[in-house]
Image (cartoon, rainbow, N blue to C red):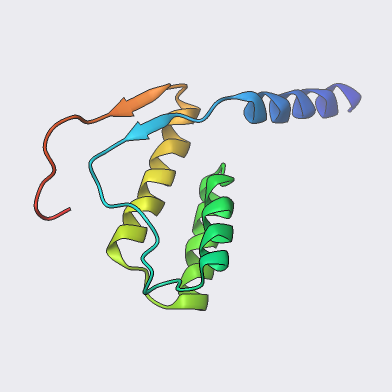
Length: 107
């Protein structure tokens, strides 16, 4: 039982020490002013988004945003999808994903 607890703690430390994958995509990915107008609330939301480390936290955050501010606009949807992609790529131990092509008109 003690061995199992020690293994779990080591796994948690490894996850925290793992640097997040860098994702650079030509997408509009931000919180629009019309969605969260208060700058303090917006900065706190960005801070919370930056700390998300698993899909469950991401899903909870999406639901909270919908409940609090209404339907999620496109640029914020892009940001949330990028966070989900970073979570997946970090678990795969990928260090970086970058797209250097041109931006499409529908993004």
